[in-house]
Length: 307
Image 1 (cartoon, rainbow, N blue to C red):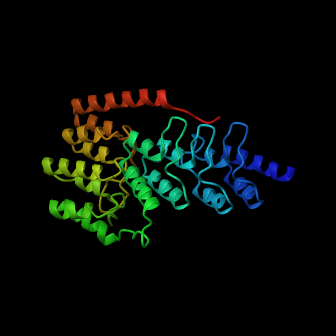
Image 2: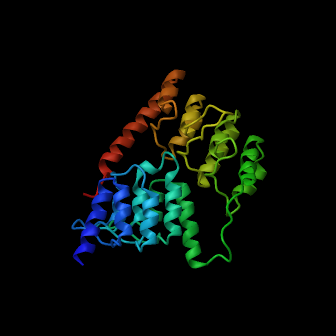
Image 3: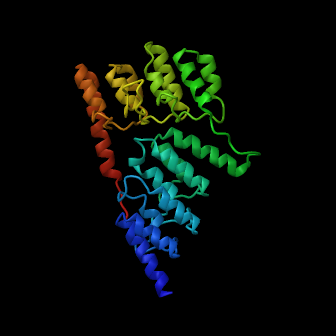
């Protein structure tokens, strides 16, 4: 018994010290992955704190395989799923969708509430994470009505159809594709661009803004970054980067209403503000500065770290 408790202590300590190799060793030795420390938190909670930029999914997978309860609650009532949605560092590179989806595949319960009475869906809605909201709503529905078969993964051709409809300004086809219950707007096309990026590239401001809003309302990740590709130079750009670089003031205004990351850097180390500054767009610079100040005030009032 003492040996197992020692291993449990080592597991939590290893996770807190970002020592994935030692943590893996503890799990292999049979550490109880559901044990909590004197602070009321377990190893599965610490991987979602500010100790990590991204949670180590390999370690999480090993812990789950060895009996870790993904619905274990910490002293604030949070599960791993709740903590994942609260972890803002998962947003800029689209990691949050992947992590939330994986947790739910492991059996995470989206109805578990923290001490403030917020479940995963409420947390996502409050933060305007529309892609996560859509994912959670689909999961809640499946808890009530089990699907007769597995949800098919959108094929590359399907993703190309979405981007083609955007490029061709084919609103009827785009409407039909977006109304498909299996539509996933957070998968890139063959060039590494996501549907929201392709919409930003539209020259017509009316159709561009309509499509941007339509995609965001259907769950497109506003902070998704373009994947580097020899066919374009948008590597690491978010929609806000691309819109600012193209001097699209009205589109930037729309994007800002969906609570994007204000100062993400692309592969060249540039922020959306840098592009607005390069273009000499003083109004866009003012808007971005104002949003940055608002975000900083919000972060100061809501930051909470497990000790």
